[in-house]
Image 1 (cartoon, rainbow, N blue to C red):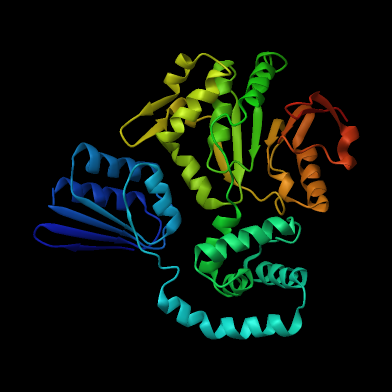
Image 2: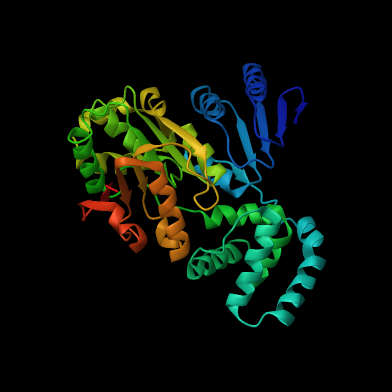
Length: 386
């Protein structure tokens, strides 16, 4: 619930759960009262919705109100900073009280690991089993060297002794797991990343897909949405947008919330313009976004072409039949067995004659090579033929 503390000239609001429409209306009323200072405390909150952020922008930048943003989750602090805000970040994650709660369990668990597991691989297998039993996430078929790196980054970020110390905390407390999950699922992305790939896709839209005006496209592992919105811009350029839709999925609900907002820091605009200029004249791009002092917002006509959904490539089934599936730089983190499972999912989800686009270091696994022909070897575009 939201707690409100009002003084004569100041007001404090404490948000302890995801912000609702009613909370936004309450904040709007608070801003209209023109307090000398408004302090907003965000507790167990990893993301804020688009309208709430725009409301903050108008109050802080346009109305020049004195507003303090106090954030207790690193992900939300990072997101707001990326949009130009200056939140004060206080980590509840390493709070002494939480460490005290888990300290006894931690020591017992580390003794158990030391006494029963000799190699790093054995420790990881034990960790996988605990995570799956407690949280329902199967990490077993990810490449172990990648998991080691993520655990080491996590341990360093939160000032833990080492990666084994980190798994002790992750395995016993959901708050630790959720923060590890955000570190684990970080993806490098930008608008029109590898622009020649998107240029090849645009040529596909203009050519072989020109008469297929009802395209269904799946952007798998969409992260914070840049790839999906880039595809929406290409559909608009090719005049295929009217009856087409992009399904953008990820297993990380926090990045999906950020993607739905379609708000990006102004530093991302330069890479957007640079990459887009390789595909088309830059002047066309200006109708796709609105820029302000802190960030830029994608236009309604681009946003409405993308439907964001939570979907786990490992556990979840096919949910539609698609003309094009794009999954770039995700499969490289999976072992062969899991890659084959994901390719079966893609094969079942792709219509006959549909196209599959992979990352620069990825290719069709041997088990499914006879089912696809190469359309563009350089940019990893394949067509389903069997």
